[in-house]
View 1 (cartoon, helix red, strand yellow):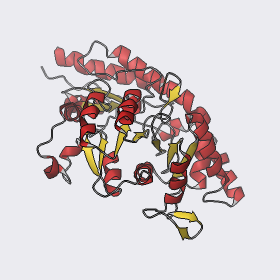
View 2 (view 1 turned 60 degrees about the vertical axis):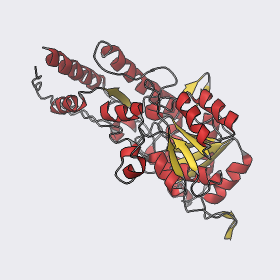
View 3 (view 1 turned 90 degrees about the vertical axis):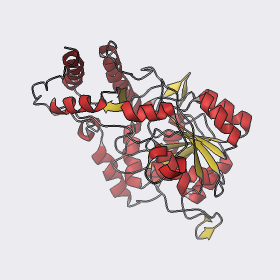
View 4 (view 1 turned 45 degrees about the horizontal axis):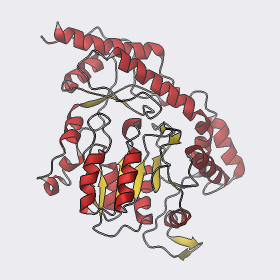
Length: 377
């Protein structure tokens, strides 16, 4: 029978709260440092953040840029992607990789995902590599580290460079190695809702290659090899500003604690929902930093409506698989990615962020349990 709406909860539980996430961070101090320096672009804060984030991730070079999309595009340009080149990527991650591929002049070659982790399937990538893509973008989705060691092995055997999309996986690790240190290049976003978030847009490309780092530094600033001397075509104006770099420097030392907080909430959810007809995150270990807590259910819309009436905010990350996006659907009419398409039809995100009050976590749990209890009554 249909479940009745529960009594309206007076507490409105947001999907994310910048106020709570940033509580205790010395944002005023960061801003004051920049104002006192009178240096606002490509100054000391940027240089120090690049060094500190590279060291944290375990990679030699960090080249900061204006946002995560620019990071992906410039990583592809650094690899000298040519017009029409294919780039293997997933289709269940909001069209972000595909946007960068198109901007760089390439063509997405879509690869299906693993049904448990929703990250790139090594078996599907092995098939896609037969089409000889110029590069592969492996997305660590929702904070879940992909089977990156196997993906790297496949790419190296095929002689294809691999880019890690780490926009949702700051700090995720496996066997002591963090997201961003496996591929030829790795790309990060510092959008405010990310695990390491600025107060606006920001991004970075990391690499162990001196040559790629040099190209990236030129590409982010008009293609300059030195001031006003353009040596690289395809350059742009994409720089992280001093204010955002200063904020990120304040927040970087808190990242491990904040990731542990996210992971603890995810573990509570997984334990509470274990007996429900839901697909839950595959891991709550170090390889998962719970950027988003995503469950899957064919009852998504009715569950979302019930939770909204209970004061619990939710969202869908992401509702449209890339191959069905209106702008490109005609090009992929005969393409099917069954796992990706099923995920986009059933996935929904619950609140999960550092600073989230215990009573809010418990209210989310009670509301989800109540929905399934009344639905079965």
